[in-house]
Image (cartoon, rainbow, N blue to C red; front, side, top):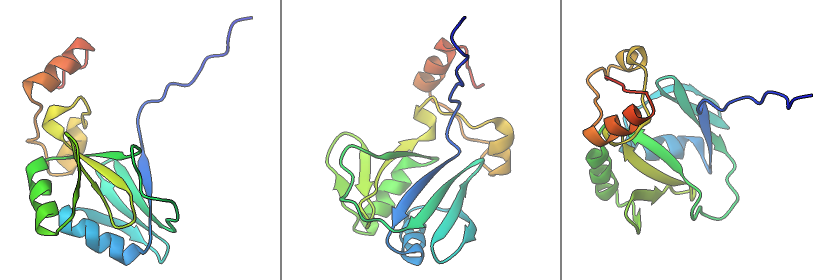
Length: 150
């Protein structure tokens, strides 16, 4: 008998970040990003990223992240860099735009234009971001996989 068919991982629905306080997390991330709050309780908050979301969950206890991180895609990487600097958030040394939030979650900021990750046109339209485009490098990487976005 053959091996059972395995499921294929197709993407991420959400990321859960443990934080110390929900209101403080919303205030901190609200200084850096424009986002829509979907729902909030005393112990959780959900912010929309189009067809994905981040779940802030109260209760972080572990040490700050070192290599473990979340790669957050944005429409304007330099705007995030400016917001981090204006708010006194220290960057993690290295070649990427990484920072630790007040609870030790390591976040890497990635520009939408420069990576393979692609939102479907109808999702971008629903987010009011239908003008987002990929650069030539990202288009080439997608094309090499038969996934040309435009």
